[in-house]
Image (cartoon, rainbow, N blue to C red; front, side, top):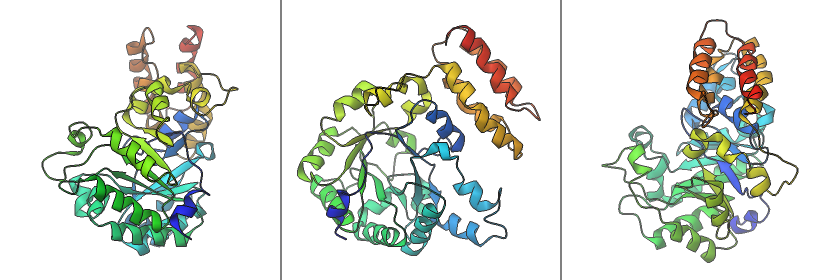
Length: 345
């Protein structure tokens, strides 16, 4: 199927929470589901080769097995996208097939991460220099499962950073079947800047992403980078199909409590309070802890939920102490929600 035609048959999301290593694990995603039901959530990046090896391991499909650790999620997290890294079409095709089997809504190829480790693996942002390779990967992924295949990428890398080169990259990958382009509106310097610097030092070029949408109106274009508030996202939706927020969602989760109403147009949705978020995690904690998981894996994500709440520092200290104890269970979250609820937070 022609990539441009396939675009019209796939859903766009007006707001999504970006994939972030060490942050967007299954527990943070369940937390975000207490805040927004309609936004698209992403996993951390999973390396396609790691999935292949996990699949070969004894008991890979069993609860607690290697595949479950890499791919498992709570059904409340849907809609959810699996982000994968790699440059081998066969391995990425296998990852796409696994994503469909495990119940993901789509699969996303990472062509934006600039870290040295990712570059050594020949994937991430360095692939922008080889659009034909990315196209071969996307085509293999699209052939292997019915899931939409999307791509997250930069506006350029190093000296491959002209607008015509960016447009050629998108056209090549779209023709292979990519269904949405999540564009981080900064170039990446693969030498000289670390990943954190690459998120802040190269200037934002929203005008390029807007131009991409004007020049290719048939493609679904999502803007990522530097968006700090729901209002900033709403303004960008005048120019692009969707917006993606990363660290601002993790550091300020309740800032986004109104996106279902204001961005997704669901007038029935109110804004979650801190106590509701904490209490809403209790059923997830019950399931997680009953399988031998540690409560701290969940509780560590809650430190920002009480942003701006009087006594937040003491609340965080008490939660950290209780949740890090051996054998701590969901009752810790239940207790932690009570003072917040009593204070109307």
